[in-house]
Image 1 (cartoon, one colour):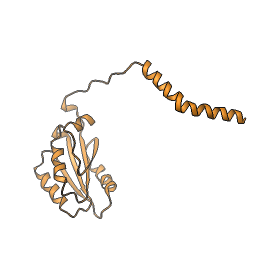
Image 2: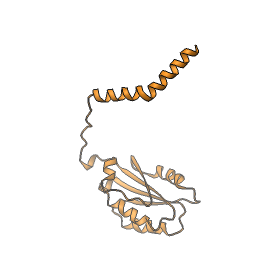
Image 3: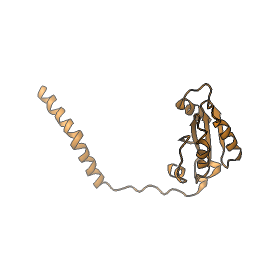
Image 4: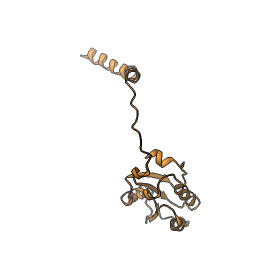
Length: 152
C-alpha cells in the first residue's frame, strides 16, 4: 500500500510540474483559435458605467482626477462619477461640489462620517451607483481617454 501511495504521489508531482504544462501546450497548438465576436461601434449599445472614487484629504489631486474623468471618450449620458469623502478636512468636498456644478458628466458627492476607510466608503457607494458596470478609481489616478471603452 505504501508503494502505491509513493508512486501515485510521485506521478501527481511530476504531472503538476511537467505533465500539465505539456498538455496545455499541445492543446493550445492543436485547437483552432476562436475569433472574438465583432463589437458594435455604436454608442447606443454601450452600457451605463459608474466610476467610484474614495477620497480622504485629496484636495491637491481630486480636481485633476475629476477633470481626467470628464475627458474620457465615452458618451456623457452613459457615465457618472461618484465620489465619497471619508470625512476629509482639507477642502476636498468643496472642490468636488464646485467641479460637479460645471461638469459635463454627472459627479455626485457623498460624505462618510465618521471616518471608516476606503473599503467602507466604496461599499457605501455601490448601492448608489446607477451603472451596470462599476469602475473603481483612486483619487489621484489618471486614465487614458479610451480606458472605459476598452474596459467595457
